[in-house]
Image 1 (cartoon, rainbow, N blue to C red):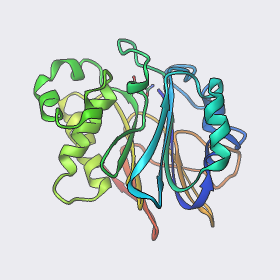
Image 2 (cartoon, rainbow, N blue to C red):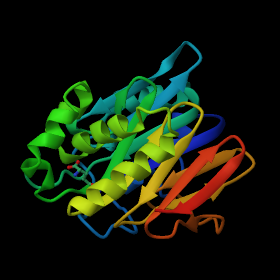
Image 3 (cartoon, rainbow, N blue to C red):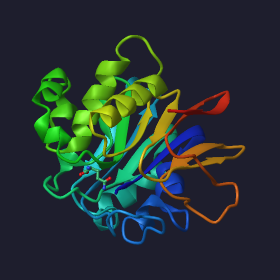
Length: 242
Ligand code: GLN
């Protein structure tokens, strides 16, 4: 199970969000505290964020472990963002460890990450794969990419970001399931689902973080109940049952 992190709030540097906390995503790459599937997250990483220069996010990914990338260490203190989606990857057996398989996936305004695995479903359901062929990132050789394409396909009706995630989580769960913790951002909102693994929410005066596991020992980290959708916008946090 990979680890992922979403942030919405006052602009903060990628360094503050992803590297500085004592149990940051950077630390979770080699020493996660709550990981139940897999042990370390060394099969690549990615960070996506929004700037004032264009509506689409910037996305930085590498196939190597986060700690081994000196270029990311160099840029992280210089980039501020108010909406971020980041992940460190533990590749599910059967899928290659390469940059295109690392979250976040992106299309239009979307950033997307997945903690979990689809089992045989991704391979068996050619019909689903045909449905997402219009999304370049959905063609990456990893089950998470298929989920991203489906989330976009289900969202294309003007629904909210969270509804797109909830629909694909429910649909795939009915088809046979797997572990489906999804996380997405669009610049103004972030949303996540819990279906098979943990997710924590942390609210502060600065903003809201959603993370697979707490990044520090602040008691404000609260677990999101299993099988939930959590949606965050500038008005606050709403958790609903899936
Ligand atoms: N199945 C996805 C991958 O292979 C996510 C893996 C995970 O959550 N560890 O990248």
